[in-house]
Image (cartoon, rainbow, N blue to C red; front, side, top):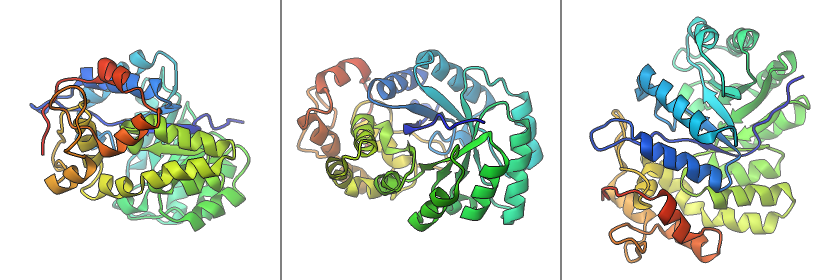
Length: 330
């Protein structure tokens, strides 16, 4: 029976773009190194935060190969493959080269709003052809349908290669119901940064995180403290992020985290339509304009500075290893 291998801090990896709109593969390479060096336990690629709907097949293939090459087996890789056409998803799974990938993240079908039985049959079809462990993805705010706890647990019991769910319904009650009734080989993974502290405390196995793109070491530390039962220091980290949780999503995802990464000097603040960069007012709130990196012209994010001061981030090594010259957009 398959066991879930996606535990701890997973990064919902962004796709950086250059100012001309092309994929910035060099920036992506540095970001992957940054995540792995600073506490990421696994990488989740080509999903919502990665702007996968706006990427070509060729770009997706190049990103996959780059991430595999840079990772070199150091952490697990979870790759997205989903949609609202069951036959098409099944066909894609059958015809994809999954070498170097450790699992498949697959979303509940969106737009056509299937019934609970329709959800069950959709994932049954996927489970029967998948060569890799599957992580379900329930995000009703995007799909228009919520997979209920009883459906999740039914799927988990019937298909042992479905090993976890990225649960982003926003309901802690729903999370508790799944954890209470799931089989032993099945885990819940948080799909909501703001609820991760509470979900891990309730028994979740970790998170697939957006904020982790910019602050992997601090967020990883919070989760590891919880795993050890050290809830008070973990809670302090969680509370330090309270305002940032909201700011990162007020203008949509990944606009917020890309703005933060731009302030940190990692990437250009570029997205592909229909997504646009976060509003100037939101971006200013995420940074403290009165403080700068030691490199001139690069804003020093307020929340990042907190963890430099606490000794959780080696500022000099981060700047030397990962920073690139970018255009700061206000």
